[in-house]
Structures are given as C-alpha cells and as structure tokens.
Image 1 (cartoon, rainbow over the protein chains, first blue to last red):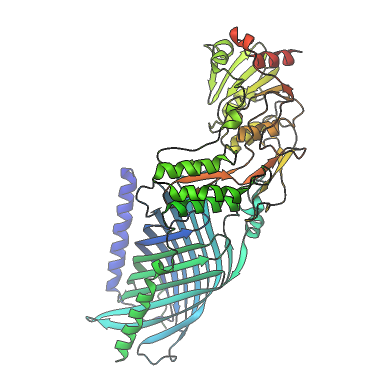
Image 2: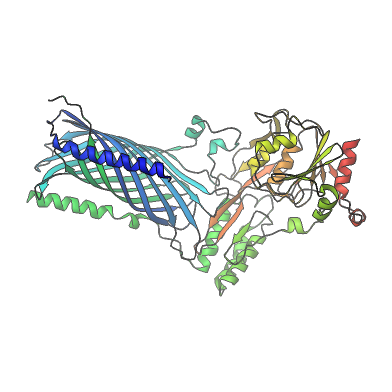
Length: 282
Length: 336
C-alpha cells in the first residue's frame, strides 16, 4: 500500500470514528422507522469437505467483511447483508503441500415481522418471515490443473425466524438479536461431473450467457440442499441511535449432489451500526 | 426466573451452533488399502477410455489390491499404484508423490524421435533467428519457419500479429510443433484463429457424465474459427508433427488439418485426446487421468494420435548431413 492510500485510509477511519462519537451528544427521538447501516469485520473458522475435489476435509481461519442495511419499523424488520470471506484452507495431512484458496460471498435479504405476544418474556419480540439468499463459494486447489476450480452456488428461498430482547447489563442498554434461516427451495450450482466447466458451456465457444449458467443449475428441496445459518448478536444501543455490535455467525450447508459438499463456518464479527434516519419525529 | 430461561435458551443455541465439526465427514483413513481403493474408485467412475482401450479395471483391482495391502512402505505402495496406472496406456495418467511421478510414455518412446533440435537450431534457425515470445522463427527464402515447443508458453496478440498478421510477406509458413507435449487449449484456439477464414467443423468431444464406463455427454462440436480482430493467413501452411505431439498439440493438429491451406506432414501425433482431471489421496499424493474423449471430423477417436497428410520420417543419411528431412520436404512442397 503506498503512502497516499495509507493516509487516505486513516483520514477516513478518523472521520468515521469522530462522526460516530460526536453524534452521541445529539439524542434523537424514537422514530417510526429507523435506517441503520452495518459495517463489520471479523474472523473465524471455515471447514469444507468437497467429495468432488478431495477425500480430505480442508479447514483454516477465515477473514470476513460484512456490509449491510437494516430498516427497523414498528411491525417489521428488513435486513440486507453482503458478506465476503477469504481463507487459505489446508488439510490435516502434515506433509501435504496442498492448499485451497477459498473465496466466498453471501448476499441476503430478509423480511421479518415482529410479534410481541407469542412468548411470555419481557422486552422480547419474536421475528418471523422469509429471506432470499445467494451464496457463492469458489475454491481453487493449488495442485490441480483443469479442475483446480470448484464451486458451490446457491440461490435459496428461506424461512427465517428470530428474536430481539432488550435488557440491561451493568446499566448498559443492550439488545440481543438472534436469527436463523432454513432454505425451503434452492437453485444450486456445482461443477459438472468431471470438469469445472458448467455443463451448458462445455463447447467453450463463447463466454457463458446468463441462461446457460442458469440452466447449469439444479433445483433442490431441503433434502438436497440442507442449510442452517444463524446469527447471534449483542448490540450496545447508543443514545443517538447508533449501535456497536458483537456478532457470532454459524453457517453450515450441505449439497447432496453426485459429489456431496459440506461447508461449515463460524465467524465472530465486531461491527458498527450507523443510524442514518432523517429527523422527522413520530 | 424468566431471565434465567432466556439465558438457558441462548446457551443451548450456542452449544448447537458449535457442531460444524460433528456434521462434517471424517477424513478418509490413510492406509495402503484406503489409498488404493480411493484411487481405483475415482478412476473407475471418471476415466474415459476403459471401453475404447478394452481395459478390465475390475480384474486389475483384483490383481493389484493385495499387493497394495502388502506394501511395506510408501515406495512399494507407489510402485503398485504405478503398475496399476501404467495399464491405462495413457500419457495423461500420473501419480505424483514427493519422491516420484509415475507415467506411461510408451506412446512416444516406442516410436522414432523424428526430431533433432540441434539440426533445427544450427541448420535452419541459425544465429540470427527471431525469438518472438515462445516462437523461434526464421525466414527460409520466402517461407517463414516457426518453431513452437510448448502450448504452455503464452504469447501476446502483437506477437501473433507479427508472425501471421496482415503485414506478413512470407508466401508460406511452416509451423514446427514436433516434441510439443501440449499445454493450454486457449493457446491452441488463439493460433488456429489466425488461419481459419471461416467457421469450420473440426470434430467433437464427449465428457464423462456419470459413473458408468459409457456415461458420456452428447457430442460437443469443435470448430476452427476466425478470430474477431485479425485477418486470417490463408497462404499455404505446413504443420510438422511427430509422436512427441501430445494433448493440446494433437488438438491443434485436429483443428488445423480441416483448413484448406494446411498440410500436416511428418509422423502420427502422440494423441492424448482426453482432458486430464486431478484428484488427491489421503496420504497427500495427487494423481490425474483423462475424463473426456476427442474425435476428428470423421468420427475417429484421436486418443492414439492423428495421422499426417504426408508421412515423412527423418532419414539417417539426411541427419548425417545436418539436414532435417521433414523441413526439406515441407520447403519442397511449398515451393512447388
């Protein structure tokens, strides 16, 4: 990184931090709807067992960057999240020089309705709704040739549920947020039987078209594409509506295709939620 | 009490969430038998030439599995697996360990070499030849001689344009791909683009589509077709071949030979019509093998090579006079 980029980066970081803390002095009234932006960084563990690539499980620490937008209303919660993970995975065989570069992206939109009377717990709101998720996990094996690239692509319609609970700890206003997603139906993409090239593009005549890529996928219900993704967060609520959050994401999926793939990930993230709602009062 | 219940609920969730490891498959065991079985099974399900080469893979398992089981060390195990893979008679089949790489190079070693790089360098290229990226080239009268030793070596469009583009004044071209063991198929396409005046069918490929030995996709047509931003070189071309032309080089010959201005001269290519696929064993060794089959425009499988239009071997008496019989024959043909 050259010096100019470094200076720019630190200026931006300083500006952001000052803005985040300054706003603390200006408490705002409770709004009908609140817009929050999410910027989180974190790390964790990734495991992959891809029968199409290797009989060995690959694992390693992974880094995560997560961006998002949250719209919180009286009766509903909408969350859009875009997350990227990167890891250099290794197998457990000590003498092996095999490494797998794993790049993963996860885009998610959830619409959750709020229900306060379902369970009898104080300050607790149950969230029920659905979400759409698109995940692409690309892996490159350093010792393979034509089939070095392996991938799983998922586009899922999911059932989502969760809860919010506001509480105080050492007089700090905190909110516990939990959400779990289960795909009901998915379109999934995996490498063709013995090549990385999508089936509809084996002729390599032209760049793959969208329809060719779409047709290379298959439909799967829960028995074929099984996934549990859950997010647990503790958010510290600042008086200006900004929040600091500590999150834990656990994401496991398996695609029971001809060559089964299982991928698990645990991530801890630290994030800032900026309140950028307008000044209109309720 | 209610708070305690809530805490209990979240503690349970956290516990459940830590079970990624339990849900993952265990690594395959690193034993002789397990390594042998995984190698045998993966090849059984994906190798593309069992029927074409009439190989009884089950019988080979019966023969070699007990030997693998009895192997006393890695070297002995490697030898057993090497012997098993050797029976596939395929240059695209290798077992790669830290101490050795198995191979079957009989497709090349059981034939005359038909190439003497010293003669090419000293008699035809000379001291003043051009080195245009990976292409060593020299004018022999009005004929451009181009020697390309590996399709793994990349090049720029400017370099191709320099050799075969609009400003090329040579009346003909000799492309010498002898002993070129293959490489990238995209390099094949980029060169063929410079010689195809129109989209011309050049055969087809079939890909393994399932575990059965005859599970293949329907034919995927292959073409020699013009590039988007170059004027094709349509003057006469001779491509020189020998048994050392393997894999991508055989694909190059397959596509060039359908073009009207091209003559293939020399010996039958080494073949290698299957696209190699890699795998890994629990002991960390990797291996590769063919998973496709390629055919020429007449439906002939090119796994064992493509015969030339004009068969020419290097003559020992020419070699003794530092002459390359094939280049001489090519010059004679192009000067007619």
